[in-house]
Image (cartoon, rainbow, N blue to C red; front, side, top):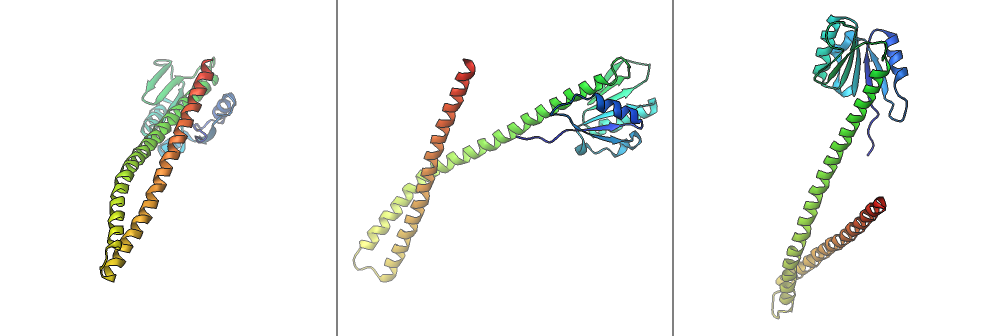
Length: 225
């Protein structure tokens, strides 16, 4: 299962803010794409266009508007501010607010951002696995139902086919009745072939399931040793 590359939206009017943050971001296969947007345009945020926002709150007034816009978007966000009043960090819904401190800037926001994205990716994988498991279980239920119905319908077809054969052997029947009985027999034979194919598929699936179980048990045994 392949997931999309994460996107970090940087909200700032200060080029140095964006540069320092991206340069400090841990490099690796999970390095995200960075998109820069003026914080004055925060009202235009679209939640489907990014996975994490990192905002530069230059003033208390902008901090309020940024918080509102980020909260409305509902995506994880880190907001950096320089307000000396209040706690050094606080959480408002999906928004983590940090007071800017030269001792950890910009390494701390970058590390926190990476962990937030990793958690989001893990949750996405879990959600996708649940969706696939639900779909597989639904298909398995349908398959079992079809297999059960296959035997029932096949038994009924055997009866239809037998009666059609008896009619064809009955002396003195009109040609039209014989033709209809022959049609019934031919259609029953065709349906019987179809259900035989279902039975073959059922057997093949059983073999695949057994082999898959053996591989899983072998893998568990190898891991335990």
